[in-house]
Length: 209
Ligand SMILES: [Zn+2]
Image 1 (cartoon, rainbow, N blue to C red):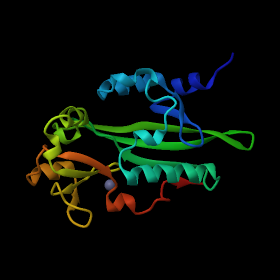
Image 2: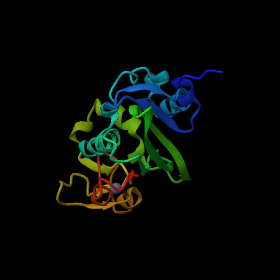
Image 3: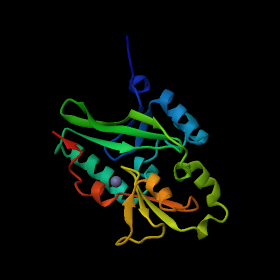
């Protein structure tokens, strides 16, 4: 029996894809990917159209977050570490969702020929709806009127937000989205992804031997 790379990533749990050592996506696990695309108003991306052949980094929002993923990739392809593994959140409006993301090199002999990226959902908690996590609506509104709304920084890892909306780098307090609403925060904001100081702190914490 013969398998190819696509069959293997297609069979894996979670959102799974393969990149080359420069971050170009060349295979995705279609079964889980298509459900993810449908749930996230990204139907244009079914079967990886618009994704295959593109750089992973084109799809990561926030300079800090993109730099962090580049750091993982370069640590792996330089053989400095065996893999990277981090906990992250990927909430939708009514679901708090915890992910385990692993980044693993694929060897052919002694050479790293590609990198496997896998995001597994390890916990989901249903909660009252929080509009801040309706990113599809954010994109729809971006066309009209949204430009005048203040920017709200959101941490890509823990999904805390910087209160109040419109705070600049040095000021504002990082709090949970629930606390944001308790403190009178409004949904009419533009989300800007980055990393909060706690999650920014140790770039090497996710790297494993
Ligand atoms: Zn954070």
